[in-house]
Length: 125
Image (tube, rainbow, N blue to C red):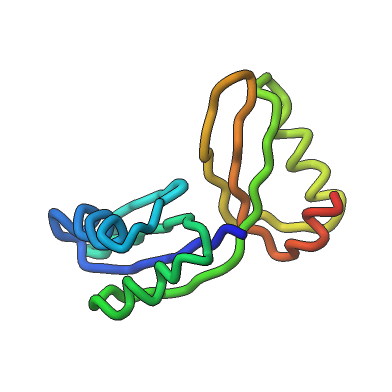
């Protein structure tokens, strides 16, 4: 299962490098990520394999882990309308999406990661 980790840090040059180097030293592969800064804060969302204890590694090395949650992967055909159709199925099942990431794209497919409020209902949809 995949896990999303949210790290909040000071907006300083090198913070994302520190995260990548630290996790790399511990053999953690980052599947996808999103990083933004706003008003002096950096917010990093990482998606990793949850068997790797990445959140614990980050926290024990001084990073503020704001939260973790399990996320789901979905592979869609890489063509117009597929994202809309998939998200409509989730919405019709009452599933709210709070984050979405592109993980891989190629071979006519796009692999996406979704953070949702109900994993089981999303898997059934």
